[in-house]
Image 1 (cartoon, rainbow, N blue to C red):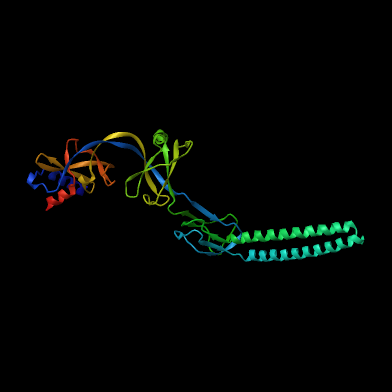
Image 2: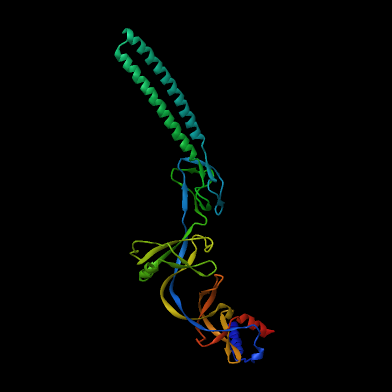
Length: 351
């Protein structure tokens, strides 16, 4: 509080200092305070969530043999995450392969017997019933081969489940099992989310729904503090009966929003335009919580404390860049002129 009091006193004293026009620093331009129509907005709290977030689970009952990743590790798509013990399944595969060989041998024998009996039937040495039984034996042997092949395919599929791989590139956020534990079917093993594929989630009050439906846009505060317009919104078809809010989602890119999933993010809904006094951001300089501008008074100038509002994008130049303006809530009027570069003037004054 003492420091704040001293700073306030310092600005008050400086504001009474009158300097002759000859002392005005060279190359300092003064601009007139402007009144513009600025977007009005209601600021809400949203959060970031990953578009692709999943928990990989065990699809076989097996003991955990090796875990290749840990929490916060970045993994590439297809990377091996966990290896389960496959010795039991390999034994089942060997058994299935042996069953296939037995079935193939039985089929060969059944076909041979059918061929022999079919040759004897021409001389009426065997009955038709014997030939029918032989034909049935061939069909059964063929069916046993198909069954053995199906069992082999099933066991091979089960074997593939013993190697857990990353479904997409991302970050591991949780590990639910340790080496040596037995993973049961459906048990969670690892949780993670995909990188660079996030979306914004916000619950919008009922009173602002018409504003969103009119513009089909939202404003979100980027990592550097600026507001960026988001389109292609996904608006829930109904309101939450408890909070009377509607869920709105919008995809965001990593270039402008580097917040991690779970982070809070400022979101705004555009409403009716409002009138605002603005000056160039370069005209304002701050000391702690206090902000001030140099105001021109005829052939002199003085330092004046101001209360700031929000930053507003100005008109675009020929190069495509927009000047940065800042709203003045109190301390200036529309007829005032301020130094365009207050910090430079302060520097020249100190010299």
